[in-house]
Length: 334
Image (cartoon, rainbow, N blue to C red; front, top):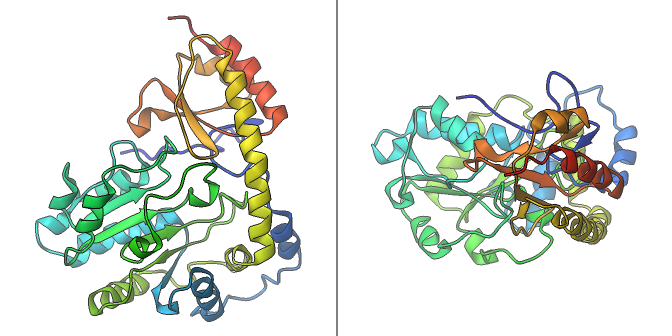
């Protein structure tokens, strides 16, 4: 199985990149300023004591519930390997993820030979993502998924990469329900800093079984999984002034999204799918080579299980002008 992602490739970065979900208002200037004064001449604290405590206070959980990760993708791989290596029942060798979802869930399952199961109640590893990717929508049937999270030896992981970039709607999960799930956070997208890799997992409320899983996941991590820049970013993410910047950026993104959708809606042969985030999908027949000639990069949604669809992030007005110009020429009449 081949990993497919948006963003730069061997040809470099497209001038007008709509293929990743980076916050178009970023990078966060507060964090950029802090990074310029960063001393990267030594290792971070091996135990990340201060960072773990800071994240715990931010989420109002106990510090032992924070499991640090190099990135969300690294944690997806680590959890998958945990089930492959330390569980032996047939149920433990199966995994469930939505039909349209982040490609690293099936990729990790394939690497660790976990069988995809069509019924989440028949497996002990379940991947959720809300708002979802590539659609940016809410989940359905969350009640049964919450019931399944109480099954012994089960990990229901809620990927919250796009929750900070929610522009409308509310989470399907209450705070109490989130405390029963494993929550995966990767704030580099909302901060406009995807080039810095750092993420973390919040474990459910502590039980002996949860504590044993936390211990095993920590033991499976590499030494110093997060570098100094990642530590600085995650620490800054918890600061009130950075959260204020995020809220201001969401207002800008809402306006930019409305404008971008209105301009695309004027084109013939394009269907726009609803979304609650800074990205959305369109259905259109496009000549990818023409897009490339215009230095415009979209995310082909075929690898998400949506052939004929394209995921498009919300970008600046200047980038939107370039997008519309490219789309007008790239659209293939039916």
